[in-house]
Image (cartoon, rainbow, N blue to C red; front, side, top):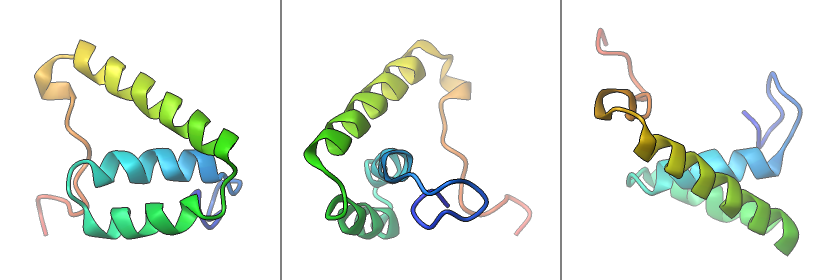
Length: 78
């Protein structure tokens, strides 16, 4: 969504942050997309992305376990 600007302004920092977080959970598609986007980013943008991801992870650790899970790609009804 952020990588292509679908429905939101194109934002490589946000795209990389969310893809990186998904990649840490083993999502192969996210790993490939993240690695292709990083080639388009400046070192300053990559550093900002890493900072945002660390902040997001920190907030997740503070939340109750039941609230921490990332949404799945498929709904449970499919």
